[in-house]
Image 1: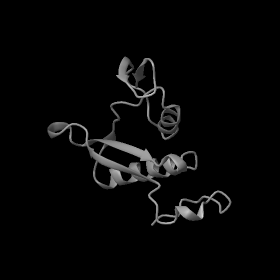
Image 2: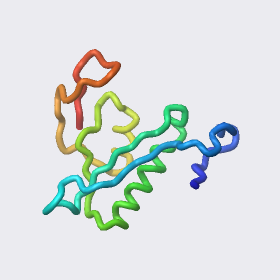
Image 3: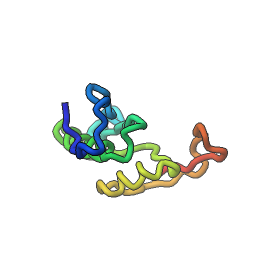
Image 4: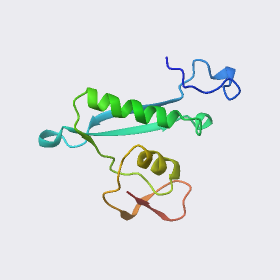
Length: 115
């Protein structure tokens, strides 16, 4: 178990034993480039904005290094997910490409851009 550092005023006693979020790490390119990893993240909606994503991002970076990955690359970070874009940029990630009209996402009436 992890103590996410939330102060007791923000902590909901019913959250005990609940999953706050999760992530995975995997090779982004099998074979010759298997030293580059990718990851996927999800934070439970009621725990968003409390630093869970940042905690998972930092753990991801450490775990990726410990697993022997030399770099990390995320294929699709959507522009409509402002929190995710800000988080990854704050953790040192750079945009290397922009894909206009990359995805049809639920709840959006337009095609979203991905970085």
